[in-house]
Amino acid sequence: MHSIAIAGAGRMGGNMARRLLAKGIKPVVWNRTAEKLRPLEAAGALTAGTLTEMVAKMQPPRTVWMMLPAGEATETLFLGLLTLLAKGDLIIDGANGNWHDAPRRAQKAAAAGIDFVDAGVSGGIWGLANGYCVMAGGEAAAFAKAEPFIKALCQDGGYLHCGKPGAGHFAKMTHNGIEYAMMEAYGEGFELLKASPFGTMDMAAVAAMWNRGSVIRSWLLELAQNAFDKDPKLEKVSGAVADSGEGRWAVEEAVRLGVPLPAITAALFKRFTSRDKNNFGDRLSAALRGEFGGHEVKTK
Image 1 (cartoon, rainbow, N blue to C red):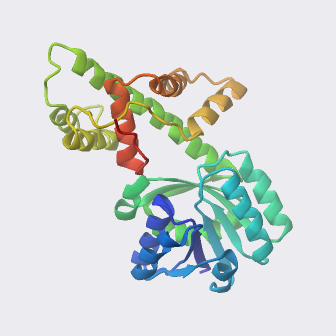
Image 2 (tube, rainbow, N blue to C red; image 1 turned 180 degrees about the horizontal axis):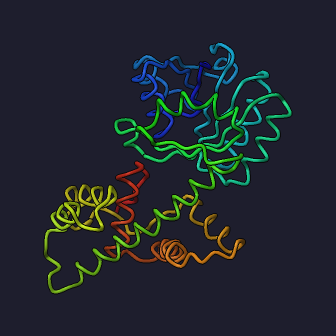
């Protein structure tokens, strides 16, 4: 098996390193700010203050899993790794990136003799305990190198080689679009309950009850119960719901391909309008993002 490094020790990357440790795999971890490395070092991970040090601490063949924010940060990291890694090494892009970047990066990596896999990672802050879900794209040989690490991170059956470079991030983009629409549906439903003559009912109890055999039971509904248990009227949560970009890309792809996405598109646009209002349904959507992903939630 390759040696592995996690480049980026934020909410996701740090917990992924911890899960690898729990599975008997000791990663090297690098982060742009050193303070996030200390608890990981205490947990048993090797840490590195620079990318050069990170690569030096690894035994070839090497795998580096990038877990920085999508966009410029990941692009800069990717280009830096191309100058440090050697033929036969592997880069895995785990950021919530635009799928169009993956084929381009795969081609650029291949020119240097380096394999590339794009990996859409779902599971949020709960992935450490429960296991992640990983949607992977890349050539078959590259995926075969990545698979032992992906398997260690995931629930049983919780990963898939989705296809050529870009397929993993396309699947994750679609996943997040569905997530937008599901969160909006729950938000609207509880908004209706709240506005009704029966609006004083216990929303946490409703969520718990619906999760016991109903057609709409789901993990998101469990997280809604958690949010209501913490703040029954969601009075501490702002209704401004952020979007990380994947919902926008899903809608853009739908327009390009001529695929109707009315629910996902409406959910995306509702997030835009939520930033000018503060209603109960939007506060639930914002609270859900905090529950499953540890995303920052604005408070009043």
